Amino acid sequence: MPSINKVVMMGHLVRESELKQSNSGKSMYKSTIAVQVDKRDTTFIDFLCFGGWADNIANVQSKGMLLLIAGKLKIEKWNTKDGQPRQQPVIVCSEVLKVRDKDGYQQAPPVTESEHRYQAQDKPPL
Image 1 (spheres, one colour):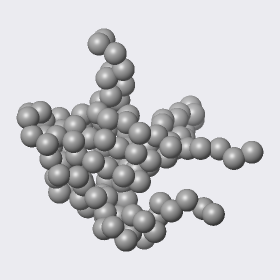
Image 2 (tube, rainbow, N blue to C red):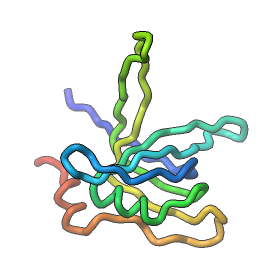
Image 3 (cartoon, one colour):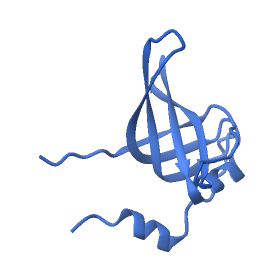
Image 4 (cartoon, rainbow, N blue to C red):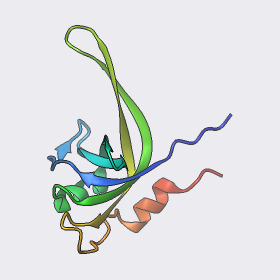
């Protein structure tokens, strides 16, 4: 049976992060957004970008800016030093849009990959 793994969230960037390189040399950016669930509850969601998405978001990042992210949900699993299993949800981004700066007054331009790259990655299977 087919399944769907697509997540779209909008929230404020919690912290600025460093752009890193994977073992294969691909750019990688990992950070966290704060998503307001209701007036009293905020959820913190980690997200991960690769390639051009990572380069672009690293260049325009500022703590507090509003981001719209879309991608796939992945559960990272590991064991602590004392052997306790841990897991954490992470969104692996296929799209990132900077909605506005942290001051909230100005619409900011989107953070995008080149058009041909986007189309090649996101065409639905036939």
